[in-house]
Length: 184
Image (cartoon, rainbow, N blue to C red; front, side):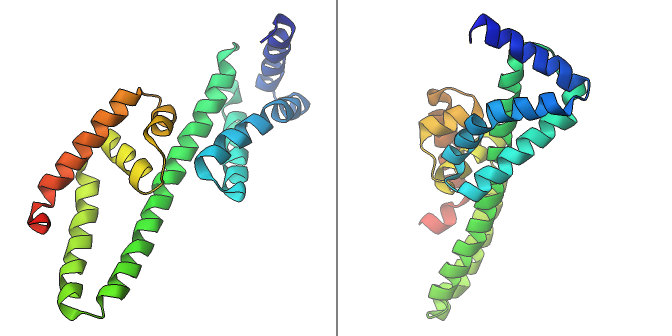
C-alpha cells in the first residue's frame, strides 16, 4: 500500500469510528470487491458470497468503535470474512450431511437388512464427527463436506499446510477407532 493510500485508509477508519456513514460507504466500495471474491472462492456460490460479504461489512460497522486505527483494519475485515466462511461451510456441511443421509437411506430402503445397519451407522458417524476435537472437526468438514483442498483449508483456518495434514490424519484415525465396528 502506498503512503497516500495508507493515510487515506487511516482517515477513513477514524471517520468510521465516529459514525461517518459516507466514510463507511467509501470504505465499503474500496474493499467490497476483494471481500466478495475472497468469499466466492470459498463458497463457489454468488448469492452466498454476496450474503457473507454483506454480513462482513455489517459486523465491521457494528464493531467500528472498537477498531484500532492501523493498517491491520483490513486484516480484521478479511479475518471476519474468513470466520463467516468457516461458519457457513460447517453449517452447510451439516445440511449436506443430512441430505446425503436421506439419499443413502432411500437407496438402502430397497434392502431392509442394509437399511437397519445404515441408520445406526449414520447416527454413529455423526456422533463420531461431533466427538472430534474442534480443529480436527473443522478440518475434516472443510475437506470432506465442503470440498476444499488442504492448502485452501490452511488459508481459511490460518494454519500451516502441515498442520492441516496432521489434523486430518488425527481426524481419520479417531474416526477409524470410533467406527471400527463398521469397518470389520
